[in-house]
Image (cartoon, rainbow, N blue to C red):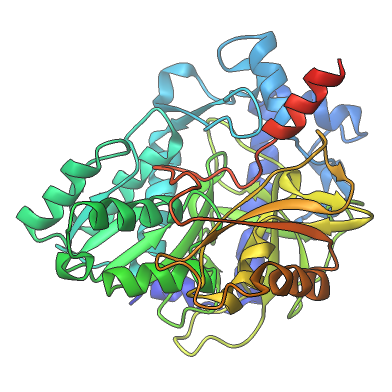
Length: 446
């Protein structure tokens, strides 16, 4: 199924031609309405739209960092110089989740909100959700920008049952009483829901779910996590990824299930860069890098070359359902990455190794660094939770996992097996890296 079939199947080169004109208009808009970007571009040697050039020249422009937005809002509350329209035109004001620092405000005009809703409708349609389907939603309507997903469901025509986070009893009750067949939540919440139901003798297969779409964090596309969710609920699990500052459901997975397609066509331009040097990388099969976004028709808070810090792997295989362009799988955030004796490690990559050890392990892990910061000495402590029935082959399980991690990820680890249910189940996002041991060590040494 497709929400905007003409756009989603459009050849990439044709879309790029259309985006060129949108980009020119957006650059003119920045110089006319954004004090933030007038100053930023002038400092970089671009005094007007003619100096900036075309979309083909975008890699010559400076990046926009989250800390810059945070700084301008702190200096001139509440919106800073980043607001490019009259405050009277704002129809929603959301917060970012503040995962990497102080939350930022995101203001949206009616047109901006329409873009968010359109992309969400495209993404959820791709994932198999349909008009009139009853859906329970595990995201709050606010204050975080994930709440804009409700506008996408309205556009799609679903029957939405808004629950939000923190009330699992009500969510499960709504599924049972109202015969909801779809659910939208983080993968962490999906895992939490499995255990919550099991502890109350609720048959998850009997809930009748057909579709689950995960967002908010990596994991929904991980074979281990997806396998547990689909096995428990008997439903199809698909993954979506947005970035609150740009749009919801910037990427979403369709029935082919081999990575997320770019759903924000016409609303944003996306680049792939080397996260260390900032240089562009080609969209080639197997390529890895960080995503960088440029809004193409944003009114309230436009963004130019905004660094997402999302690290992805590219799949360029043709899509049998007709969608064009690259697909991606997010492997983690660049600011979550650890460096162990010169080797870069994304904590989420550990789960790809653990997939080989199911059902002896549950898939829930936690990295417990010994030092604060990115650089770590070996071996890196990793807590690995055993499966629900313990481990059938516990003999040498620690060593076998450690050997596989070393072989595949080139990192020496200290694997510590813990009983099922030991590690926390989160109702929103999981914290894969816990620095509490490092903080205690630092306090003792001080």
